[in-house]
Length: 218
Image (cartoon, rainbow, N blue to C red; front, side):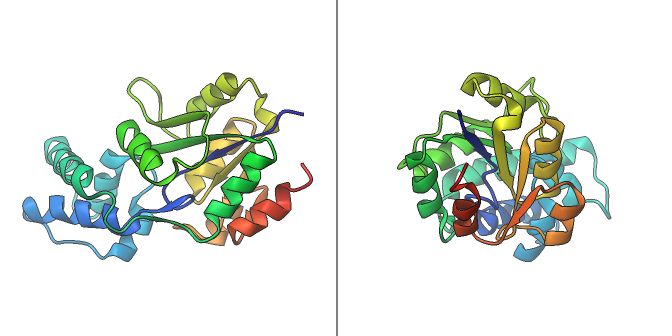
């Protein structure tokens, strides 16, 4: 049987939180706003850069123009320093090697801008073969809309119900379920168990080694 697994990127394969926070805070302070704690970014991220700043400004809504200016400042800053603190989560290397050895087709689907998603993949994940790497693309709705996941399923030529989807937020669980895939909730990422369970995680995994155990007999 053909096998596939799609990964979210931030909070699932890579711990990117500190670098995201640094660049977002650069944008905020440049525009005269207060910086936010790194910990708060766990709940701001996951839906793309524009939504990141909408979440930051949730209590003090700003115009579309201000948000877009913040996005532009973030993107120019992040492009220069995205790799200062980012790292693979413990156990991810072993997990990816196992899955690749076992014949899983592997892909990445992120709401991070497509250029940054590919940049991070090349920098940190070039030791493994990913058949498809998609970030947020113009003309394609972002997660939790299932279109990106279904596009990957089609490109891999594997039916959605045979695809596992590993992610760390409710957005990922909703995406997997909307696409008819098997939702795996990564508890080492940015969000909590209750969120993943409530939004349709089929399995919860505490560590990448638990993914190996779960999929060893697939």
